[in-house]
Image 1 (tube, helix red, strand yellow):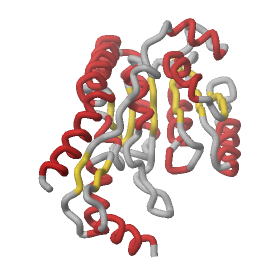
Image 2 (cartoon, helix red, strand yellow; image 1 turned 30 degrees about the vertical axis):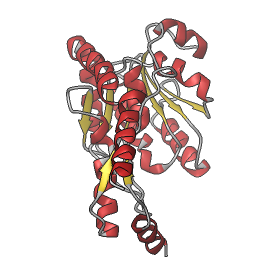
Image 3 (tube, helix red, strand yellow; image 1 turned 45 degrees about the vertical axis):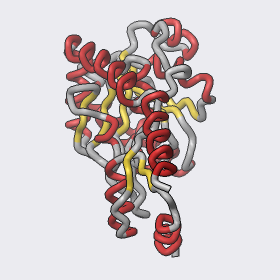
Image 4 (cartoon, helix red, strand yellow; image 1 turned 180 degrees about the horizontal axis):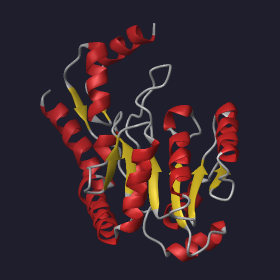
Length: 256
């Protein structure tokens, strides 16, 4: 029933836009419509920008010496928080000051499962659940972390997958290197070893290796941080994305 409505909506549209090449390919496969254009989401750099890290940490009660990983998303199983938690358990002896901050609310059952896993792995001093975060507080949270990570699975039981991953780029705009999985639309946001690291989903050991590398290779960390800022400015600013929409709309009316 949903597919029928989806195809009908696409066929009745003057233009169809997808936020990632992955979403575009899936939509084309379902609908048979092959004139879909990819225009990614933009990052509003008026809302997301670099602040003093230690000042931002004070607002959340974090220490200057903490090594902080952040995931800011809905608490749903396909986001793969449990994979990062298992990776933390492999790193805690090497990096005792490591902290994994999970921000967001969602499925209560999943949240309970995550907290049980944290307890079982004896990571209560390393993993923190902040719950829902207001929009105006997100910039401080991005700035408080060292690395942003989202270990999304390829799909969940319903076939849902990551369409794009805007939080990855919002953290880039705050100067943070990012780690994400080679799934869904995430590769549209992360260029491997350019603005972040791409890893395969559901692999705690590979996730741990990527985290360890970024914490121990200052040159790579700074390179990814600088490249991320550059990518936001050149490819994902509201002006760049806005111009793509304006061009599409102008071409549409010029063709009448």
